[in-house]
Length: 214
Length: 242
Ligand code: SF4
Ligand code: SF4
Ligand code: FES
Image (spheres, each protein chain N blue to C red):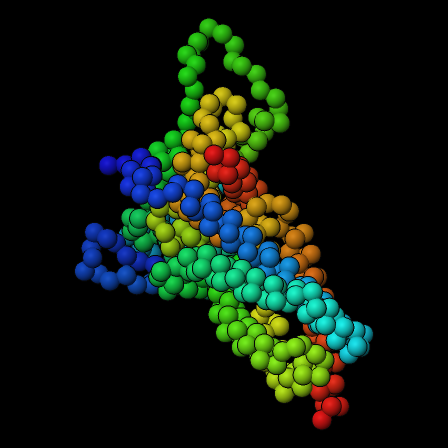
């Protein structure tokens, strides 16, 4: 018999709009996280101007309780993002793997890296947040010391984060069709290059500073 | 003119003789000028192995029967030239669809199910009156309907799609493209909510990962990203309205 479409179990058992809501939750939480990531990198990059600028920015965020609202909020958004995207990972991930190996399609591969980077970010970012909170308040000297000792850790986190954010946002633009594929790909690559460069520069300054403080 | 000798590695399996396990069989063939995969396969069948199964009808990329994985990518055999490939060519049947044997798959049942599931016909309460002229539609709308209608139902977008490979009930780009065609058709009286019931879930447009293997593999170069995004936006609005 031919399947005529709407199954009674499906239309009765669950909210028919749940898939839409989950998709939107993924979209919105993703955008918030990307926005956060980029703001964060710009803030961190103030170290390039000088330790004083960096410190007064950290002080400002602390004085107005922005850090105390911001950190838990972003933590919550990240949690929501994880919960709604986990459903995208196929139950039989081997199928996906086999498929990607067969058709050798570029975007299909990037999605596998998307899952891998997500895992990496989840672990590394938790460690990073933990370390920052332990060394509260944020100031240039403690950050520099940390960067100096664990620069490789931050280098990995930076690259994973940028990769994941860049491709995540690219895919959303593609899916919603807000822009043609080639254009958006180019724009995002440029933004990512700028942000990574900024991050690397900040990292370098920190490492120098950390070395000098010894 | 080339004088290459090509080695084809072809998937062999006949569900009617399950005792013979699936395997890859090699055939050697001298390349001819302007040779397509279809011509090569026909030569192999005529000269080397009459038992080889593969599909074709039109030989002109119109009917969509000859799609297969050529070096892993979904392509039409009658449109793909051997000279664009190295001397080693691997041919596999399309995944997702039911295997008939060797390179031949049943796309018909799959597309039939798609038509029934999406109710792919104009829904109208108007009585048809053969004596009056058809209602007019502006050119832009007509073009938006005829563009998606260029789909030849070859199944390349389905075979290339990760989601369709993982979940059986996913409508795929061909299905969503078909729905988009009725959405713009002013003669179809279905409401947004009725469309939402058909494609407003993970079986439909929200199951799409946006990887665009469909668009990259479509031999008729349909604007599938545009079509998928159109359906997605419309369905998001419809879902949020209620
Ligand atoms: S949309 Fe393109 S790839 Fe998919 S079935 Fe139609 S013609 Fe083939
Ligand atoms: S964009 Fe969507 S329909 Fe097209 S191949 Fe990817 S998941 Fe499949
Ligand atoms: S034989 Fe008709 S499309 Fe190739």
